Length: 191
Image (tube, rainbow, N blue to C red; front, side):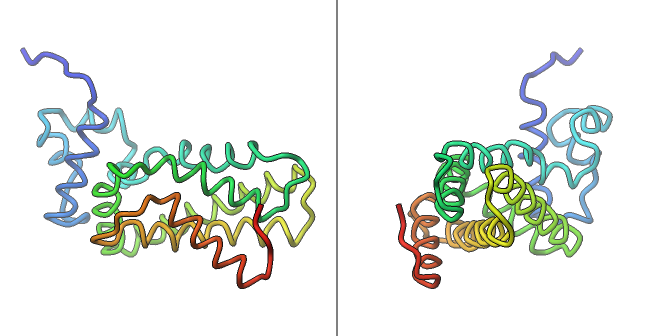
């Protein structure tokens, strides 16, 4: 009888990413992922609704990090300062030891149009949620949407730089640099 081992979700995620990277997303089955770590396909589906969810699990934590950054700012902060705070909070979600995983995950997503669409949908949902949070703070339109969409764009640019081979800077440092570029373009001062 096999003894239960903790961390099934994490083991499934690591195995799935490795299999997706070596064999391709479409070519890898949930059963193969589970079997590679000594689990059953049924166990896989207890943790994930489908194999795409392996790559997108934790979205709620990612979103929460952005919202925590919004909540951390004083009520009189500018929309762009609030977005900068949300970027700093989200960067904590991506410590340097997560970079290799994120790099491989992004490579897998880039090779599959359906996964690319899912990633874009995730980012669009993030922008909508941040814009809603800004509106709840009293930020009027179009400023709330512009700030939120700009924040997601800054995140995307910073993340792409962070996962590049040879990059050593933290995501927080890169995000600060990219939002600084946005401020230069818009002529706004930082706090």
